[in-house]
Amino acid sequence: MDKSWITMPRNSPAYDHGVRNFIEFAFQHGSVNDMILCPCPKCGFRKHKTRAEVYDHLICKQFPKGYTVWYLHGELHPQQTNYVSSSVDVASQTNVGANDPIRDMVNDAFGVRNNN
Ligand SMILES: [Zn+2]
Image (cartoon, rainbow, N blue to C red; front, side, top):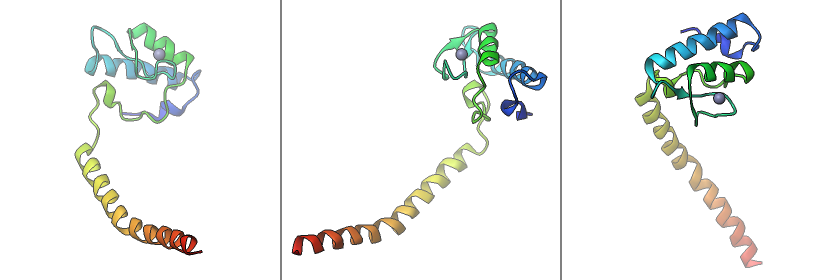
């Protein structure tokens, strides 16, 4: 799905077309009681709005530029499980490598001060 419109000016035809596409997608995949979570900066994904309201909000306020995978509106996150497990691996490896030398340095520093 083309999401390049997300970074385009709100008064451009591409942006308008993209907002309609998004609403169409969201109501097909993630609507509750004929409403979806409004992604506009004012609602911040916390308020459910009708089709017309969401369209109004996204024309008045810029669609969030970082929201390129619409997982709150029914789109599956690509490689979601891989992403989670690999980030945990990276974090644990980073802790093992980085914490011990830093802790030693801090201990050394305080040890020196305490002796003085
Ligand atoms: Zn809104």
